[in-house]
Length: 308
Image 1: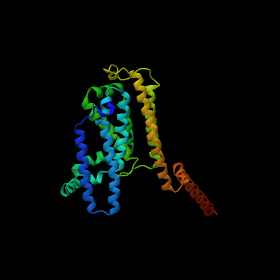
Image 2: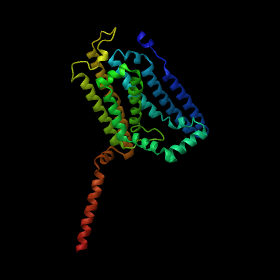
Image 3: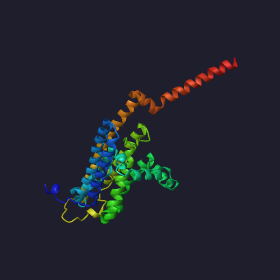
Image 4: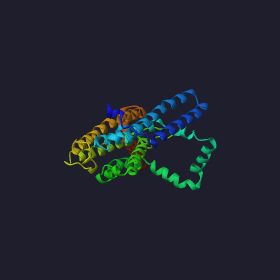
């Protein structure tokens, strides 16, 4: 049991999460004054998802998971999946954006809104916002971060340099995770910019990338990739076996998160189109083809009459 109760850390991230929760609660209280009871209950339900995401993030970086990740690659893989997939998904589902804005004083909120949305001086910020919110940028950056930080040289560097490890590796996992899930999950006032077909392709494509990465670390090699795990004091477990377990975690967890998300997306598409056949028609563009064919036949008939 000492593995679960020892080696907890309490770094500034905990203070940041506490301040974020307090600001969110303040925003909820201010919104409650001007909202219907149904909206208040809806925001409260979403807030629990947001807080769950922050808890998962803290679990990854403050609990013994972070401590043992320095000794075992398999534990490090669990940490990566919590930071890049589980925590961002819950935060996005919690939609904390409006409550956090209302935590600011009214004058500050209005002046910032006018600056970022109307001022010509903020045009660069608006352009950057459009770029990072682009669905393809979100998809590619998320998968690029996952692959890049498992390249041996960069992974070893992150283990030897705490700034690279915390701010660059973990930061990129969490931020790109947020951008990715914003294209899958509705997060008021933001919503995914692509339809269900694109979302299904994004989930499947990401799962393929994770599967190939797992295969590369386990099936397509017979040596440990990471020198930082070669001679860890007190660890007798073979590094390559540990790497294979980490790869299996990445492989299996990829299927576990992808399957239910695909089910939700498909159900959402069926509700939007009215039936599964409607979804298939939308994917195959069958209705559009039928309309074009009908118009072509009408045009041909009209030309015959004109010639007559």
